[in-house]
Image 1 (tube, rainbow, N blue to C red):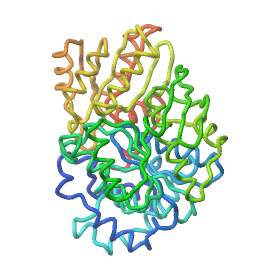
Image 2 (spheres, rainbow, N blue to C red; image 1 turned 30 degrees about the vertical axis):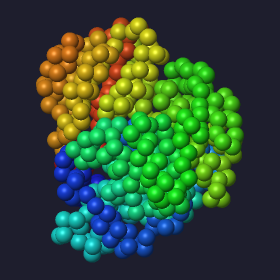
Image 3 (cartoon, rainbow, N blue to C red; image 1 turned 180 degrees about the vertical axis):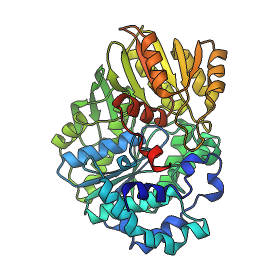
Image 4 (tube, helix red, strand yellow; image 1 turned 120 degrees about the horizontal axis):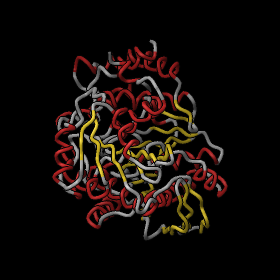
Length: 448
């Protein structure tokens, strides 16, 4: 297979990320279990860390991976979604899987996929196959540890066939309500479905109703639970664009003046969660040293998370796509970029809490440009409807025909001291990176 052929093959399977409302009837672990069995259960060949949550799970997973790598281990990282290339989702020590290796592994596992009968039985998904491919890659490359981020939910997510030594649950809020439930307790039960017997559990600061369910689940399974804000505490000491300094206190150690190479106080909370995971990992013969912690956090790169691309005017990318994420984002931008005029380039998915997202954006922005995207799978909310909602919340709003036009218009409106924020979905952020870096769109090419 060529890389394009491998992509086309994977995209021929159902993708629940792009099918709002369809997942409850079809999601399950039978497909991934059958595939893993046919591949010799690659997930059993390395120690695993499982990360679930609504907000911050990708950042937390990346922080864990960076620290483990800087401590001298070979670490796999599996995350979603990607921004520009699907290969970003599968990394070892910060390097994405190559096109050649991706293609070869897809061709290698294809006979097992066909034998299981994914197409004929309509049982398997795009994410099942991608997850299996990542697990095979990690086995082939003999990683010491793999950090695995849940794709959707937890209990029925394809990644939930692993037997983690540590689980992390990042802040839980309302998201994917059409698939995970319409209340915090319902969503928490799905996220807490990754908790397995004998795994150490690290929980970020949670809403009381979420925290209660996580504690009850740990009590039922007999897990050790450490909670940020109780067992793991942190203090933000200094913050500037692209960097912050924090102190973190755990039961075992005090980490003073830890520098994190990202903005946003919520990232300090993610770092505290990551540190809790790493201390628990020491019980499994993975010794993380203080130098690895400092280097791992000081070198971390998080694309699409308060990512500053340009100055004068500031151009910032953030994939905030749910209410909790947008609340955190606007709060931190107001603190770091006070009293600046802000133009927001916006695109949201129709399966999100659209009105609440627009309300938050309208409270923050001075002007909103809603853009059409290169829509491949029909998930984008109608830009004209979004623009109308934003105007109903009292802010000037208009629609542009493309992401490139939207960015150009926003930069024309912004003065040297103003801020252009591109946000609402990772799909928009990815397309913005393609436009700004003059990249050929991988997925459009793969699905002609």
